[in-house]
Length: 112
Image 1 (tube, helix red, strand yellow):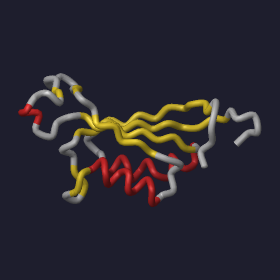
Image 2: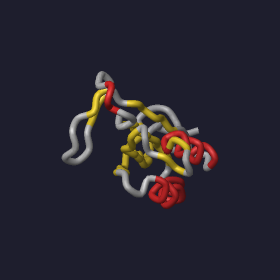
Image 3: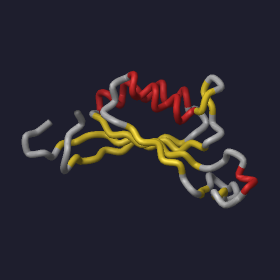
């Protein structure tokens, strides 16, 4: 990290749904567990109140029949080298889901 407090990093966002599984366990929890084991700086899973993917219908928290189809978004920020190391496993775990990677600038705080 630069002493100025500004540095470059990579942000990864994974778009899942609550019914996704990895080895019969909730995928979002398994992804968080994996990222923790790999010492990623930090990760957050957000449970959405509504959303859709592709051309599918909108699922919302107010629909009783949503049936495990609500979006779960996982996002984390770390250094490029670290992201490159964990991405292959994440792509395997969520092979059918969208994963977005973007370069970001940290303007405050640190990744430790």
